[in-house]
Image (cartoon, rainbow, N blue to C red; front, side):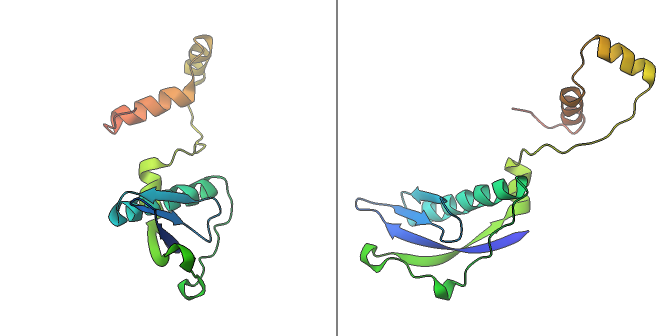
Length: 135
């Protein structure tokens, strides 16, 4: 899912930029250069939006960029930030997904006696099978 939100960029006194999102309350970031500020803005917005999705909250509707005015006293300007939430979720997302599995009763009995954590074991086995390094 690709999303676009307006962001307000404000130059910092010494150097760099602070970035805020009118539609994403509390989503604020900064960068030492404009390029870094844009990268940080994409990451911050992606994280904010993914958190909403993982908590089953509705995503805010993006404002029309024409309706957003940066604080002129702070020499701010407005730009659009594009977020690919699906790609971000693949890299960062950590929401657990419930899966149902079926195993023979005899195997379940032995595993329960050994206090096997099915979720943990399945995650490890899947990561190994898919050749994914786990942190």
